Image (tube, rainbow, N blue to C red; front, side, top):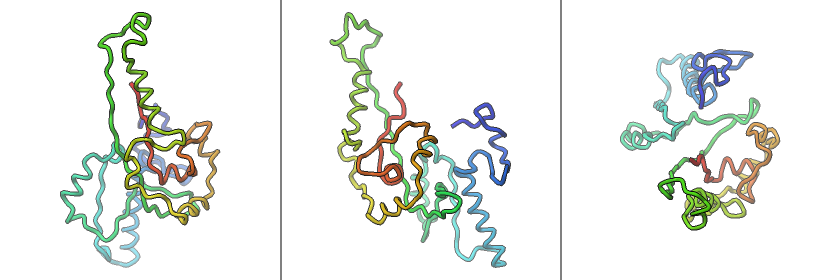
Length: 218
């Protein structure tokens, strides 16, 4: 996640600027901007009511490890559970569909990661002398990756979908009402085609279905 002028930024990424009514800077959209506007909401509430403190108790929790999976957040939440107890929680890390469509996000996909290490011969060996008789780590990695999904795009790992709640008919209908332009979405991804679990739309796949992805082979 580059953050330097030479990586394509028109201005210093850590010095927010406003151009044509939009703010540009590191985190302006994800998600320093959302934290900032929550703060502005508190300020607007105080200004509108003439109060010096909010009308309800507010607890602001800001952590900076979300982009790396928040490895310490669970321990923090468990240690300070009593102090963090609340009737409602507002999370900043969401967005709006567009400028004209208000959005209420009611759930997010989580994150789990693992690393698999395969070991073969301790040196580079000649395929003419050893090929077909010595295990090839590259071949085995390809076999593992291919086995992650079945022919319908469903994750084939046993127990992967345990506890997963499927979309209701109402939820699917609400998704379908959104003016989703898949061609534009594909251009954003610089991809020629969409794929994934059969029986679900693109929005349903990226918003409501768990996924198993390979993020690197080396």
